[in-house]
Length: 390
Image (cartoon, rainbow, N blue to C red; front, side, top):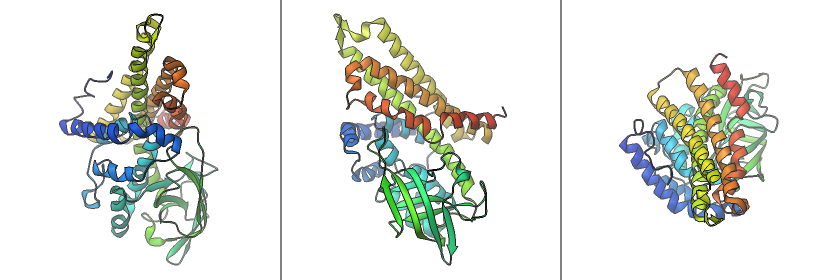
């Protein structure tokens, strides 16, 4: 492997590397051999959630009393990198949708709600999704229009959410709504937990350029009744919770992008060593060697930046504004590395790179969702500039 050197040994301890080794074995056994098949099928077995829970993947970073295992940001980065090495963004996105759905529940939910909802998800028995984006807006959360009107002990929800990862299969939906119809902007936004399949909730699957193995849906709410007890925190507290959630999501996306870039580089290298042209291995041609060096360079630069950020987050080393800016920058740098490596890998693989079934072909299709999802590159640059006072 081209990435055999220990990953930032001055930042990762023995417990981190033991987790990495166990997770790498799990991915090689339970995900990589089936990634192409699941992509073509447009789904993967629900049983994978239970298996992931057994190796500690789903409970990573959650309180022990809810069935989790407390962990720092470095563990999250390791998990994202190693799952990404299978080269299937669709599997990774759906398998990890709980990590954007559950944090607001853990932070703001009542004890009764947390104990009812969180443990089954961490055991892989239920699937959780986060529903924020609407047809009329994505990163502009303050513009959301889905309404929740109080009616006794319930809210009545009307509106629509779209591009929701795990939207078709989710048993638990963390839903952003406007509870104050007269409010504007960030004010009046709340979070509700929708459980099961209540009357008035319909789901429409969406077809995508990439992430085929991940179900993505538009959710329609027509008079859906949600208990007031399922509100997270007080009315109007939703916006801040959503913003906090975004930071961790962007860190994980950056680490995943690094893993995808590494997967493309390794596949291209393996092919270049095997494929013979003009009497010698493809890797012996200078132009190919230079491409591989450029790919490796971008992987390592992005990886070091992401690892440093994760360490700073774990150590709380830095003020909040600076860490938010670096998180935005990490996502930009990592997704640019992924885009470059996917493109170069397909070029090196030639005709094989254009055939379905290779990691590089799959990841080449998935580049754009990584650049857009969790906040587009343009949004990331603007947010970073504001945090840095530029």
